[in-house]
Structures are given as C-alpha cells and as structure tokens.
Amino acid sequence: MSSQPITGQRILVTGGAGTIGSALVDLLVDADAEVLVLDNFVRGLRANLSGAADRAGGRLTVARATGSSSSRAISTTGTWSAS
Image (cartoon, rainbow, N blue to C red; front, side):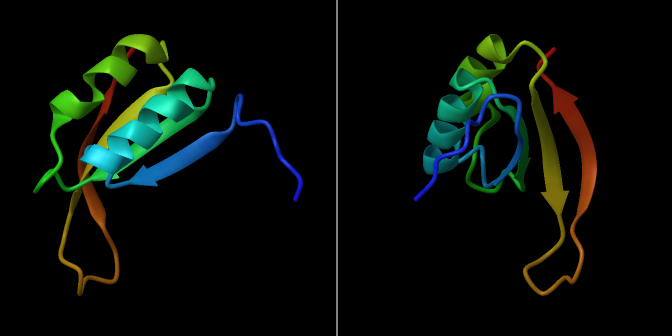
C-alpha cells in the first residue's frame, strides 16, 4: 500500500461536526490539509469543531447540509470559514 501525503490536499468530511467526524477533522487540520465539513447539525455540534477552527488558519470550511436522505442532491445553506 502506498501512502500519500495529506498536506495541502482538499478533503471533504461528511458528518464532520459529530464525535467521530470532528476527531477526523482535528487530525486532518493538524496534518495541514484543507478541510470542507458538510454536516446537517442534527446531532453534530459546531463546538466540536472549535479546536480545529482555532488551528486551521483558513483551511477549514463548514457547510450546513439541508435535505433528506431521499433527496438526490444536497443543498447548503451557507458556509462558515475559520479564517
């Protein structure tokens, strides 16, 4: 298995404001990746991302997803950038 550096990569994390997703976001931000979090915030909390946001230096964007699991497309109601 080959490993690729994460530094500078753009990575989408769905459910990134939840417990497991936010832990992944923390790791990715610490590895200098550019992270987009897409979450509906039904169970996830914006507070779960505060540590990563403080360290991200503009490399973290959070978008609230709207729609249902039966939707073919997910729209976002806006984005929040940590910068």
